[in-house]
Image (tube, rainbow, N blue to C red):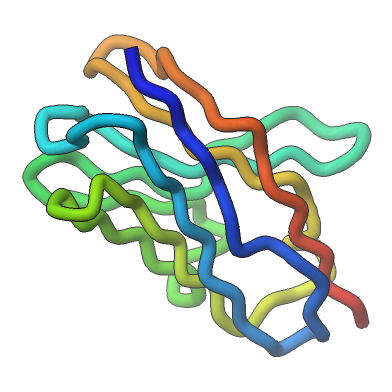
Length: 116
């Protein structure tokens, strides 16, 4: 069991940046993978980025080159650095932890709003 708490969301103008943080209630050293999802109103939840325990990353095509996922195992925290934000990036962003078979644990979400 692990609890995940996101922070760092907010309102930003297009072209701006935000860094989301996901603090876990226990060590994430062995949690594989960790990831970020997002869900906009009326749309399905989509995977934005994921990172394995070995540091391999993958990204949705829509955010490649703009977003960077990272993990700090010493701080039990996963980050999502979001640059060059666009209005279409507006959504609730959720942190997730998986076990290699499924995404098992979810945070409560943090709102990101990008104004044009």
